[in-house]
Image: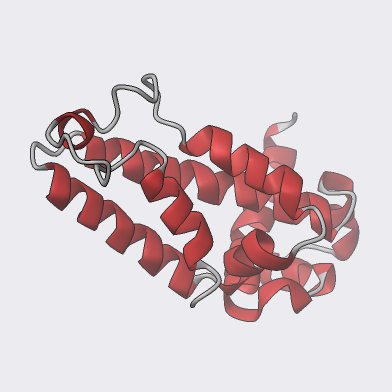
Length: 159
């Protein structure tokens, strides 16, 4: 991709992130183009429709949530790590109307949730994350590797 085309793509993604965060998925590609300072034709050249643009943003947001989980994993205190991750993720969902709508109500939600589920899986095997919490308790209520990601993905329904 040419440098100017890539710059336009990044401007469009940045503008869409702001517009969808503020107004949700009701915003139009005209709104995104206006925010990005480009013509609507430029938006359509990069993204076939609003759904394609939302998909690109969704992947960025899920990747950011996965990065939060990876940073939390480095914390020596498992409880603090979990609370920190859930707090950051809840703040992200509470502030981003578009992401909540994508997670909870979008027509392509099943495919997006599959992407999110796969991306939110720890880089290590599910049996080793979080290493301290699932091994430190013999109780059946021990924290399981998928608990945090499920809580985050479902929390969009209550915000």
